[in-house]
Length: 141
Image 1 (spheres, rainbow, N blue to C red):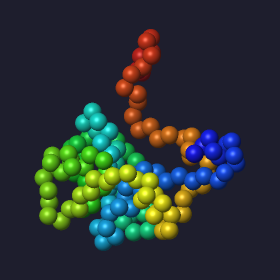
Image 2 (image 1 turned 60 degrees about the vertical axis):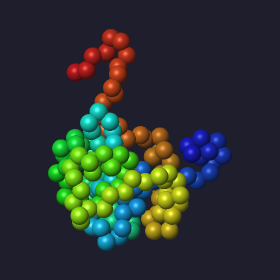
Image 3 (image 1 turned 180 degrees about the vertical axis):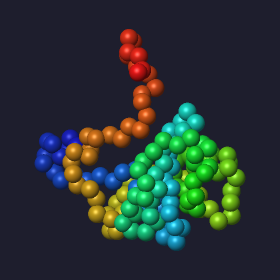
Image 4 (image 1 turned 120 degrees about the vertical axis):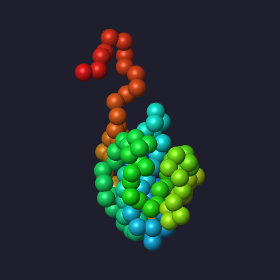
């Protein structure tokens, strides 16, 4: 997207993946936690309102499995949530959804949530933890 914006001057917009995930929860679910299995026993999570425009309730964070088990949300949407469900049980009042591809959902979100059209967001990745590997000679401080 950024290449098309820079080369052709086309307007571009982006939605954070966690926000698009949150839009898949039913509107009556109450707060929804968007989850992505970050591997190494960690989850990237963020809490959102479950009604348009799906405003964040918390900042994105890295959570341990124990942290995720303590969340009070009754709706969990994201990649790898079936493993979380197996780890903490399956309360009857909890909604779980493991989504497929998100591009179609991102297009549907356009009707209820205006995109952030700041082009700099396309080159501002979200890193919540340090890299797993470092070049030789570099040590963590």
